[in-house]
Length: 402
Image 1 (cartoon, rainbow, N blue to C red):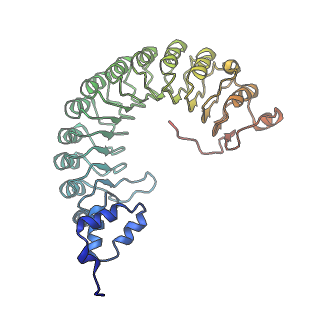
Image 2: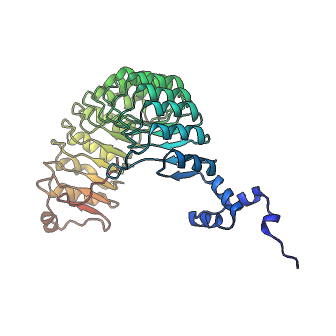
Image 3: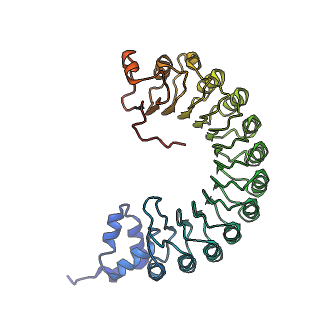
């Protein structure tokens, strides 16, 4: 029998079909080791890459990985390198990776508006951009991204302290498909900007405005009404101007809300929280309400008895909550997996009532409950679920579930 070379028999599209059926990344790398032709096909089919490279190497990478969809150049807070990603790198990326849809530049502190202008001009297909903690960026550069990337779906701007309402107006005009926006710590934005944003972006599912201290009830009302059908996650940590009116508007319009963070919103009271619990009883899965000092047993009991799908709850430092909040649970089986109590008036008896109804609990934080100790729980004969980690003294890593 004559020898037949596989490369003579199979076309490029057939080899690509074979490659697409390899689920394991190592198998895909082995595919590229067969010969130069297979290496070229493996390279051009690669969709995602995490790298550290300067302009010269980026050009070579762009030539090899011509169909790259996702590029991760992010740096960790603890292990960054100098000078890191620069505006000239972004110019190369904008010119060389035309198919790019996802770009992660988190903690790349060297980039500025010039680099963002390059991205806006060169990457019209971009759908996701993370420039969290790129502290040099202003409205000028980010507005260029909004104007050039009309299909933007996700934008992370946490820690970009120079961002103002002007950027939100540009996003509203140009990015009507936006679904996810993170503005944590952008203290220059206000209710005016948030209202402008949702006038054009009505499909937002995830909005993080933690620590945006100028956002109040007016802005949240606008978000609730405009994004009523889509909004699933809203984060308002330490937005001290947010009060009962915000929760009443969420209860009225946002029946599909799954995650709500209102920690540090100290003006929120029982009545608005009860209204929210009734409206979102089927959808709500995560609720963080630590330091809501006006919350008492009545609203706490309402949340536990009505929100049957609630998986994570933080009521830390809610000073009015006592064991009485858990007395009305009866035979209700709670879905809670993560529970942060840390209420000064809650005792071992209250924890016992919770444990009776929380058979799926994976993490319990009671380190700030002066009446709840490991010894006290053992003496009371409390039985924690087998896989549950209990934080009595802060010795365990905090669970980031919100």
